[in-house]
Length: 246
Length: 242
Ligand SMILES: Nc1ncnc2c1ncn2[C@@H]1O[C@H](COP(=O)(O)OP(=O)(O)OP(=O)(O)O)[C@@H](O)[C@H]1O
Ligand SMILES: [Mg+2]
Image 1: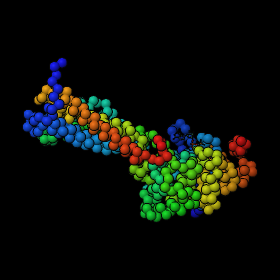
Image 2: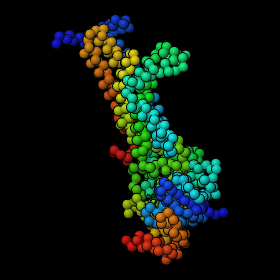
Image 3: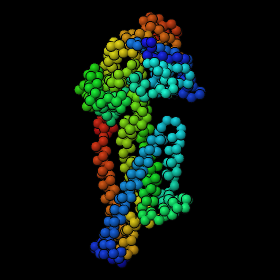
Image 4: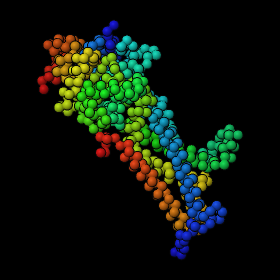
């Protein structure tokens, strides 16, 4: 069984009046990079939060790494520790040095010794090119550097899959590529990734599939080459022409 | 006005036979400090717990917190002390009430608990507002890393929340110190009560209350400076004020 994320017929409401996910089904297999795009408000962030059980679902099923999120007796903190998540606004812990940001969950959740955690953290900081900043506080770093730290923090948990929610859209333009470079490197190393982004260059480069969402529905789910050569649906074509023309 | 100033009064023996008038004030100050410190401890601990409850997901915990806060915040402190001192012992089952009334230091215990609970409501409001001032993504990020609810508060939310609310928390500490004077109404021999006693024995009202005022000023100044020092010590580089 190679599916890392299995989303089956998921419905979600934030309140009884507004349905934000409608019968969403989606599978992400091991080693696959799936890009999720769609207009603002289409439910991309909500979907990604549901995969980490940060938001409950009202109908359907989400299975992550073989465990049903809604299953009886499922240890959610343990399961979440195996799913790395990167946020639009980084969400580093501002009162902790970079190194401590990377060590906290390793020690408290995985039970690693401080020494183990630190050596793992340093390997990952090296990988994102920030070893020299290990002793700094997040507020002393640029946005791009902070987001790379956030990626390293998620990787330090040795996740089976990484979720990205518009990881570059809060960055100044000149910092976007340093973060995308890290993400591309990660994809090429074989990491399973579900990436919400409007960076179609990234999608074209490394995505195996592109999923297009609109109004809470998966409108299109196609291999990326096919998606870019001619999206099947009118809505997806319109969306693509809007974000690609400017 | 024919007031006869006599600053030397403090070195005269008081009719209580326990030392000079100065000693009386010093004992009062000690009582004030001990009462304030213990009341603040209760206010801080209980207030933090209630403040956290107020920010938990779901409905039950925040509702409980809101009840606590509204109950203790909306009744004047004087009324609360009277209730604790005069009414609660009568409401307790027989032997318990008697035991409570006969405690040798009942005014002290009542003052510590009464002021502590009163101030806990105010601390709770500050703690909750500190947690709510943090970006919502902080809780999500901690949860996503696999931290449990208590770990999220302990390592991620509260350390920043306390930093944010340090200035208002300092003024609540000063309020706690000043509020101890209300306990003279239930017979606690704190600083204001002792200043009044000095005045009643010696008729040197201005000297007695000038000394008490200075003592409050110095104590509050020290508390303020200590808080300032703490603020500097825990300041996060690159966050907020440089
Ligand atoms: N916590 C919430 N409570 C109520 N409604 C919400 C909440 N979060 C999101 N929504 C609504 O759900 C819908 C989907 O939101 P979501 O954030 O998932 O969209 P998105 O595709 O990520 O959009 P964007 O591109 O702007 O990030 C929107 O209509 C939004 O207003
Ligand atoms: Mg979003």
